[in-house]
Image (tube, rainbow, N blue to C red):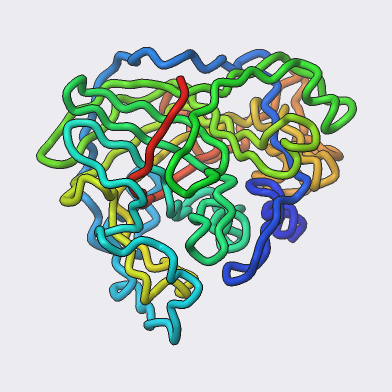
Length: 359
């Protein structure tokens, strides 16, 4: 299928195989910030109802996008031990995960080191070469850390602050980014795409604490950035424009870790040695996705790639109706319950303790 090759470049820059050195590609995803694209605010707690979520699924083959399975161990997924752990020998092993900085309550900071994708379907087959190497720590399987998503949980203030960072220089310290992309940024990547400015900044939201776990109040918008070679060349990172973002972690027995990592299973392409400990669900509107050009995919829109259906695309973008809008070609409803104006993002994740600086 056309999308198979393109999607690897889409989300994180055409990385190499899981067990080989990788380098960023020349893709860039730039939301244009136009109509219907809210700008992310600086860190002030968002208000809203907090739902601790349904019971944790015990079926590790579950694909319920609203409640992906958390806690699936490498053993439960049929992983076999690796013949050598030499490629992860420099990763710390004195915690349940590869924490580089020990954490203690009530305030803990983590970098997502494993992001297991369950939806959208169009990206599933490319996850091992698109997501994994860029999320991986540099000590783990030649990870690039180009996709560094940070979480700071403050149980004294009952808040979660989450945002993007560039790759670390020491494997321990990551700087949260507060950056506004200018309207001309799109044109520098894909001529013909012009948009408004977009803010990449941390978002702070309220949490409900249950035992050692927490559930965050839904965030209206969170722009997640990936800093790779394209950002060095053009000053424009890859950006995933996420909406209605929910994050929950049922338990954290070790405050330095969300989930756990077993180095003897690092080579397992399904788990990478991780037992995930949290879930993130979000949505991407079809209208917004259609204003996101992917340079390495011939500047096709994110919508055209995610819909993965030539009957619903028109050249580089999704087909529009007589009203000038993209029809409801997604698989979920943004802003309601009875529409299909968005694509679902459903993931589980593991994370390890780091130090965060910045706003």
